[in-house]
Length: 189
Image (tube, rainbow, N blue to C red):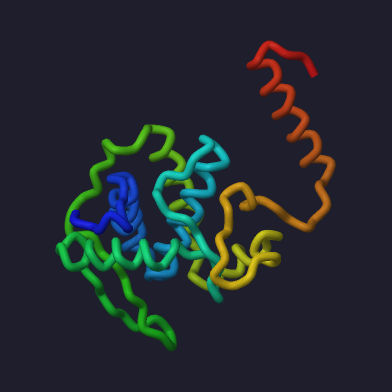
């Protein structure tokens, strides 16, 4: 895929777009918003679990939620369309037209680690009964979302920031995680 040096992109980024589109295409609420939110959640969850996102994208605050940085993402998505790897289907969905990106080939899943595929599939399953509005509203609950201005970056480490007070269950889970981490490094709490 010939992208300019300004828009270099990893094979994982391309294949995640294709994989998500292939898995989401049967979802009646699937459209470009669900694809973009799926990318965001896959990258954020990967960052939380493995210390790094799957794709090369940064995410920014837009009116209806985080999106991959438009200059890079739209170039990649449009190149996939022009190369014939994604087909755009425009469908009526209530009072709007949805752009549904449908892959014309299978994703090369060999570029992903087994743990990444499990995580991606978990995100897809979570989206099974969500629509774009539900997902967008969910992303607006984070403290990061509330504190950054439109078009600013939403760093991955801010994904779980919240203004809600931790519950006792949250504290206990955190303590167990700390103890597990310390034990794996031969330390004691």
